[in-house]
Amino acid sequence: MSDEQSPFDKIAGKAKQAAGKVSGDKDLEAEGKVQETEGKLREAAEDAKATLGAVADRVKGSVDEQKD
Image (tube, rainbow, N blue to C red):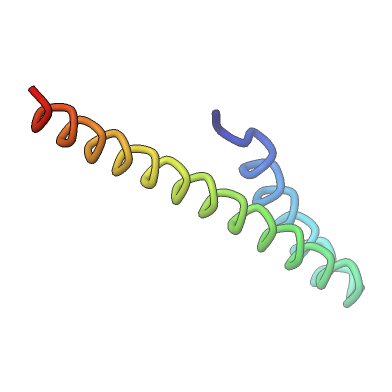
């Protein structure tokens, strides 16, 4: 199951950063950086979860083969 919020947070965060830079609003710029980082972290967590799941499946398959 992928997190559909991750890409949105990354894009919205970048947009907020750009708007903050253009308008001189440091708070909006910082908020955008935080939102972009949250999206990246969520995406990394999903990738790690998928990788661990694949490793677990390979280990289980290997153990099942040894039983036969």
